[in-house]
Length: 265
Image (tube, rainbow, N blue to C red):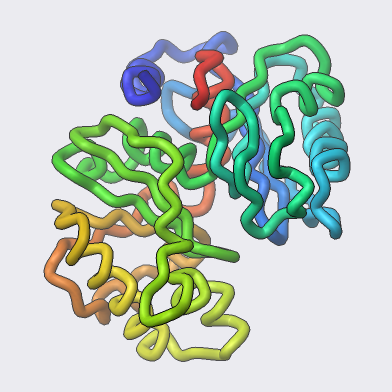
């Protein structure tokens, strides 16, 4: 269902009715923009506010509302969270406050944003959906694992463009540690790793994913994908690795797509 939405958005006509607002909630920043759903491009400027600390539901929802208000947007709003989202309820809380667990995200945001189309979904799922609709062609063919490298490691599984929602490969235990504690881009920064050193760690993680899931391709996104030329060629895996084309704006685009069609897990 989510992929049919993505395919529809990719071919939808242009115009104000093909726009929605996407907000991507991350561990360090909350970003939002109006999205032209026919192209996947931003309309106007992207807005960013530091993620409140602690990142409680009320504090994050208030920040989302501030971003939407500053943009002067009155239409549908989609929001990504670093959480498993099922029936619009957060079941986990990665890099946000533990009080999110059990929160009805739709009702929370409705209280802050009012009566409009609202959709909430996992951040990596949103980014992957955007990539299927507007990005790397390999994302639409065969078994694909989409990964975002940032504060943690987000994941989304696709089979011929169809999403299997709410995978959490960043929390897989590899050599006794969570994958994202080994090879997130935040770890690279914190430990001051060179690209070569970090690529070795990413390879360790991808090799385990490769062994277990045998994907046709990996698509790698997140902010560090802007510098893919510095580390993707250094990866030591058999599976082809493609940099995401939408880079770090994919989460916002995927959130807007979900809001426009009132579709989310």
